[in-house]
Image (cartoon, rainbow, N blue to C red; front, side):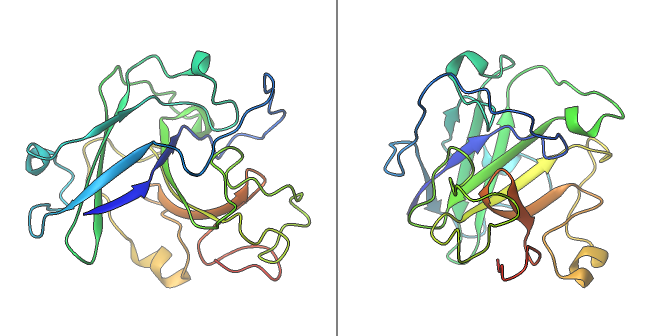
Length: 208
């Protein structure tokens, strides 16, 4: 059984950050009791976009909070997210579901449904501020922000067609980065909200 720190947040990567507008001190310790367990279930999960084979897997429920102002009063009112996870000894699988009304603003990519999983990588990384490095976007590198790394799996509906199964695509695989221009499931790393990059890309002297 794998036990790991799991962090959930709503994220509008297309929106420009104007202000954090935080209401007083806020912190999230890395030893938080928010945990999810991934049991060893080889051969149980098929990556087909359907939830049938997850019916016997226990899940955990989490409120959905904005990444930059994660106070309880800003919780998504449509329902909590259930997260289920298993592993087969090599890969780990996730099922994310929100039991609530579907909301979608057609043509506005920064308002489309968007959700992410974030994992602590660096010892000093925090959930708040996506890693918590205090450097500006012009000065953050893998040296100045060492220890603040977080790994992010981000999905937004974008122009993807509901009900269609999306996977990796040869164009992004060819480019060698974590992008997904068709399905909008992207793999990122971050040191703070202003220093986030697709895997395989980044500022000078940076590495993923």
